[in-house]
Image 1 (tube, rainbow over the protein chains, first blue to last red):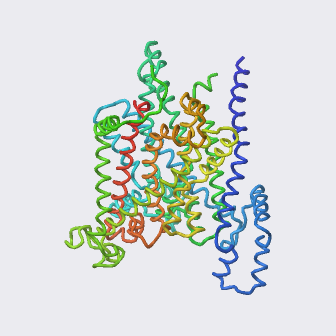
Image 2 (cartoon, each protein chain N blue to C red):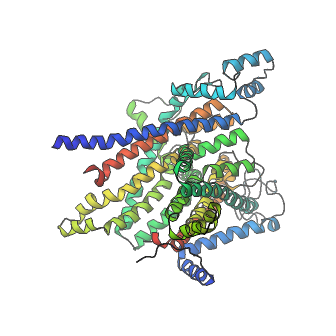
Image 3 (cartoon, chains in turn cyan, green):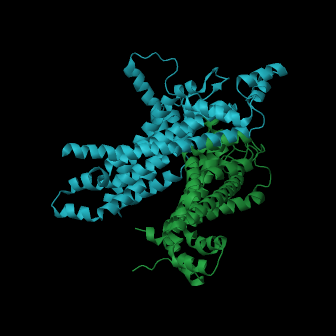
Length: 335
Length: 290
C-alpha cells in the first residue's frame, strides 16, 4: 500500500516534468532562431569586425577566415550548422579569447551561480520574514513600516542601491571590500580563510540583488498569509485545538509559500538580468561581466552563447521550481 | 449574486466615483503628487535651464548648496547637476511612456488575438510569448543594442520589444473570459466583424487591467533605461539619470552626491508610478481587493 502510494507520487512528479522538458525543446529552438536573426541584422559579419580591429585587408585572408568560421555558406545553412552545434554543446569559438565559447561561459558560471543563489536565499528569507511579521501584526505600525520599506525597495534601482552600500560600508566604514570576488594577490592560509574572503566580497552584491526581490516576496507573503488565515482549513485546525504556533508553521506558512515559489520561477530570468548589473558594479567575475565585455567588443558568438545558455538556465530553474512546488503543495503531494 | 460582466461604460458620474475612490487612497495620491512634480520638472527644464545640460558650466565636484548657481552641485567634469536632473526627467518620462506604449501594443495585440481566436493561433502566439519570456530581458536588450547601436530609438524599441509578455498573458486571460459571453454572442449574431468585436466590444472591458499593468510597465521601462544608461549602453547624447549614476561611480570616494542625487530621482519617479498603479488596481479591479 505504502509502496504503491510512493510509486504514484513519483509518477505524478516525473511525468509532468518530462512533458515540460519536451516542451522546452521547441522553445529553445525558437530562441536560437531569434538570436540568430538578431545577429544577422548586424551590419557586417564577425570577420568584418575582426578585420577592422586587426587591420587585415588582404581579401584572401578574409575569405579564409570566413571559411574557417563557416560564414561562406548561405545564412539558412549557417543557422542549421549553428543549431547542430548547439545540440552537441558547441556554441562556437571566441576568436578574442582563443577558446570555445562554452569553456569561457563555464569558467564564469560558478561566480554567477554563487551570487544568484546567495541573493535568492537572502531574498526569500528576508521577504518571508518581513511578510510574515507584517501579516501577524496586520494594521499596526510595524506592518506600516514594513509595507513602506517594501514599496521603496521595489522602486529602487539596484545599481544605485549597491553604490550607496559601497559608499557606506566600503568607503566610509571600511568594513567590506569595494569590488571583486577575492582579495587580489592574497595568499590564504587555508581553504577556510579563502572562503571567509569570498564571503566578505559576497555580502554587498548579494544584498543589492536580494532586496528588490525581498520587497516583492514580502508583499506577496503578507497578502497570501492574510488570505490563508481566513481559509476553512485553518479554522478547522483551530477548532481541533492545535496551537497557534503549529497552525502557523504547518498550515499557514506552507500554503502561503506557494505564491512565493511561483514567483521565484517566473522571475528567475529577471534575477539573472539583475545580476548582470550588480556584477558590473562590483566587478564580479561572472556571466554578467562576461556579457558586458562581449557586448562592448561586439563578440557575437560569445553574446549568442550567453543568450542561449542563460535561457537554458531559466528553463532549468523553472523545472526545479516546478518540483519544489509539487513537493510543497499539499493538494498534490498527499494525494 | 454578482452579475456577469456586462460592458462597463462609466458615464461622467462613474468617473467621478472612481476619482473619489482614488482620492481616498493616500499612497496613490502621494504618488500622483510626486509624478506631477516630475512632470513639472520635465516641462520647465527648457525654461529653467535653456542651455544644453551636457555642457560644462562650472568647477567640478561642487557639493550641493556650495555655490548658489548650482543648487545640487556639479558633477566630475563641472556640469550642473540640477540642469541634468531636470532634463533627465524629460528623458525618463519620454522613454517610459513610449517604451510602455510599444510593449502595450505588442502585448495587447498578441493577447487579444490569442485569447479571441484560440486554437492553433493561440498555441503559436503563446509559444512565441514563452520564448521571449525565457530569454532574460536585459540580456536580450543588451544584445539588441550591441547589434543595432545605442541610439535612443533603438533603446526604446528594444525595451518595448522585450517587456510585452506579461501584458499579452493578462490580455489573453481577459479575452478568454469574455469571448463566450452573451454580449459577444449578441454582437456576432448581428453580424459584427471579428475586428469590431475585438476592438469595440471586448477591449473596453479588458481596459482596466491593461491600464493598471501599463502604469507598472512605465515604471519598469524607466528602471530598464536607467540600468542600460548606467552600464554606458544607452544614448550618450541625451541627459539621463542612469548615466549620471554610472558616471558618478568614478568619484564615489570624493563626491558621492554625484551618484546619489540622480538615483533618488529615479527612485521617486518609479515609486510614484508604482503607487499610482496600486491605486488604479484598487479602483479598477475591485475584485482583487482584499
